[in-house]
Length: 200
Image 1 (tube, rainbow, N blue to C red):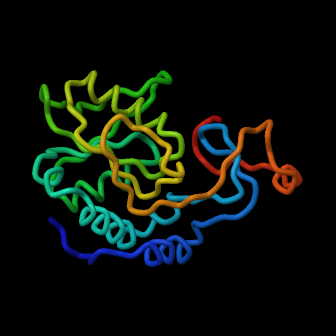
Image 2: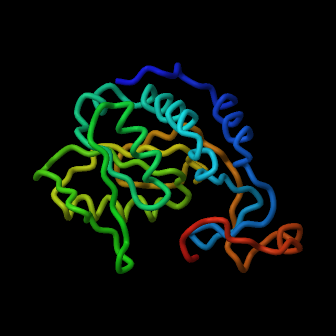
Image 3: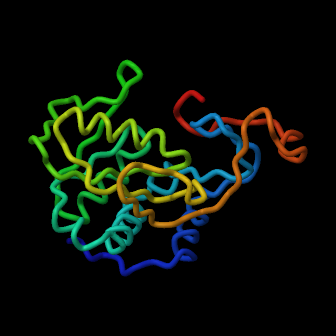
């Protein structure tokens, strides 16, 4: 396993996001459709390969030993999970693949193949509701893989996301999110922007 980074504290992780100008303040439309006053733009924090490697190596140290011993591949949902999934696979010394939505539903393509029952680790950039993760897990299962664990750089679900498998984030960031029709006045007064890559 790659040992380029010792375990990082939450403060260390947030410092990496701030250094990359990836911790944004305002009124954001999340990929789930919910609204939030803060947004972590993981694409910015991952654009520095050394930083991406440090974060993935730190996450690898937090995974249970059994997961590290069993997982033979890391599979991530496109687009957001591809880079962090690749870096986590590098840290663990296993294969990296991704699922994508060519017609709106995740599937394994591009010649990627999983053996029946192959133990897989799912990797996300950010988990909010867990819906994307559950859809990716369903695609991996349909392709023959067995997701034994999920991981993410950031869990912003407030501990409420149920992925259907054990879950280890690098950091938990408890930031409020709201339905679009139930915004607090201070958020409603700010124009909403959509910083992500998927339609709400």
